[in-house]
Amino acid sequence: MSGNPDDERLEELREQKLQELQDRAQEGDTAEAQEAAQERADAQQEAILRQYLTDGARQRLNAVEMSKPQFAKQVKQQVVALAQSGRLQDRIDEDQMRDLLKELQPDSKSFDIRRR
Image (cartoon, rainbow, N blue to C red):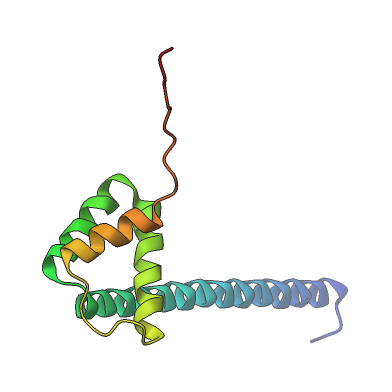
């Protein structure tokens, strides 16, 4: 460069802009990597559920997921944790899934009305 202050300023601005674009690209890559990791974790969870749940149990869990997605997510995590810890020897059938859902379900608010 010829040492012109305007040219130096212009070069500084170009370098700043380039750095900003690189920073944004890295942030985008991080978000994509997180999304890919989440997809892999979901796929692994589904594979474990397929392995340890009978068709009936999976259907029951899917039905619960339609009405209570957060609760179903917790149940899935619990089943996966049990499977990974080696505490599941056999597959969970529909009756066992029903019992598990009752066990994990938060206490329902019921009113006990008594007449005098």
